[in-house]
Length: 294
Image 1: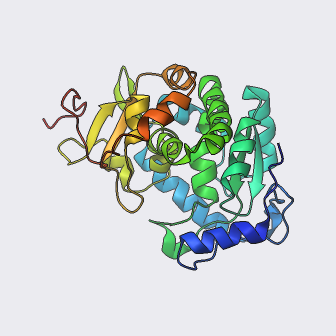
Image 2: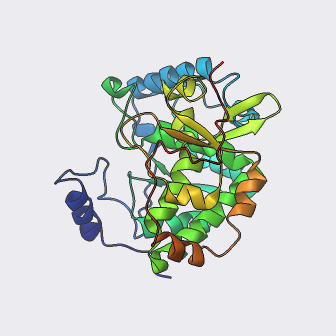
């Protein structure tokens, strides 16, 4: 499959979707698959210092909230001192699960993104946010991509799920199921929670790299829902991009994610086309809130 995408076409599509907004990042020196060189030496001391501050903030929040697999992998990666060298971690990751890291200038086309995942390559943005964006950033940066996503790729089952998701994305593009499949990525890879013997923990990168949602998503008595993951239900559910999530889907294991994406989604996409989407704060009659108020 040819996964190269015209840069002009991609940027024009982004501008159309975002009322003329342009992507951040330097797209002038990438290859046909949106891969660039990290150029680690170009990072400034101020950027390394900002990385350290972001890292320290998250490490003060994550104990007792993040899943053990994330915490353990993060400790082995040893990335507290500054922006990591992609090549070093990539070698360690390949030895563990057969994945590698590829540097990208920022957001990339869906086809290219899915192809990278399907071939066990995880795209990581090279630029870091500005100090004034410490608490919130619109477009994912290197801290979100690397700190939030890479540690769990050291887990073999989750790593296999990510590859299967990429393969499913390539298929969804042919079947018109991208909107539905994007909801699965959002509610698992980005904002997923997992049930553990010690209680509900976070595995979603969007939460793990966030300052406020780390605490909010596990706080009892909020208006947000915490329900068991059902794949079809998840594919029907809208999500929030500009606020904390109103629904968090909870899994019991990473094997559940892998097994849940094994069936052919073609009949599911066909079925959902005739059904209404569900608002982000929906709680169906047969669903149980897993984090009720005390």
